[in-house]
Image 1 (tube, rainbow, N blue to C red):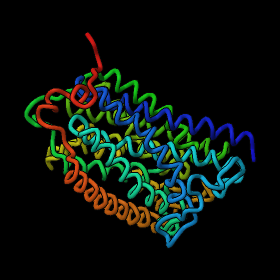
Image 2: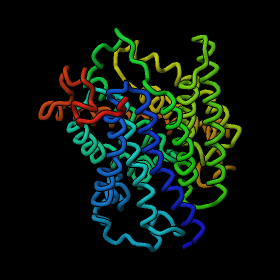
Image 3: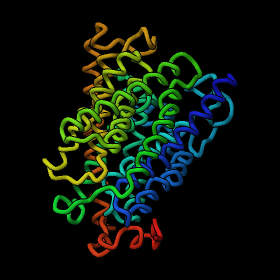
Length: 404
């Protein structure tokens, strides 16, 4: 083991954990005041539920020895055989630390989906969805891409989770928005964020945590981690700036919400590429992400789905662009364990990135729709109209976010 790598990964895991409360604040500021606590709780409780799933059976299904390219075996059930000695995925950090680091990814992936059905889902239905989606969608996809499954064998590059986390969660968010339906009054009455300052603070926490998210995915305090750290910063800054400029030109005014959303879009887009592309490529990835994610927000009005907090536009479109951009800009000069992309003489990598992203989209969409339909049939997904008008803070939790 290496004590430097171990210390670095402890900090990285803590930073990724901190992203989930940051996401809670980011989402919490975007909803109306009567739903702020319920929205925050949906993210926060993922730290509890997903942790239990992960240490009992989740880790072994995601990272156990491959079975047919589809799922891991049960060798690490209840963390059997997992201790402080190095494990199969790193020979310089404790196996248990790798488990902890990957746990934080699973937590925030489930939390990301909540932005789509904010302000209208039953808390009981949310818990059931999180349990079944994590078990039957996240764990297989994680294994396919990172645990020795068929996508990893196919050659896809996903440094820190563009496909596993962002595309996967965004497709589930789209399914949820369609099945649950729009909020009461959506498209007819204004539903402005109640606290943009909270959202900007949440975006700042996410930005900080993303250094652990991306740089930590190197699993060592080395040059690849440094490159991932720098590309993360550059892409986020470029996307914040391009979103702001596009918004300014299109709508006449630059906004703090636009800058915060743009930063998150850039962070999403650089995630799969962070350890494979140069800092200059990160500028292009971020600039494009800011513009296309801002444009994508219009899709929900055009197609009639109420993705309340724009999970699809930011994480779906940004994640897909990031996966494809990896196939364009990846370079063996940056990471000899990766591959060259289109701009470095390997056009096939772009095709691999596209095919595997589409496969995850199809799997996550179909699986999420099935899970949502079953929950709706047996439990019901949506609160009553009266409860929605009252607000989920009171109707679901008997508390309020503010006493003024």
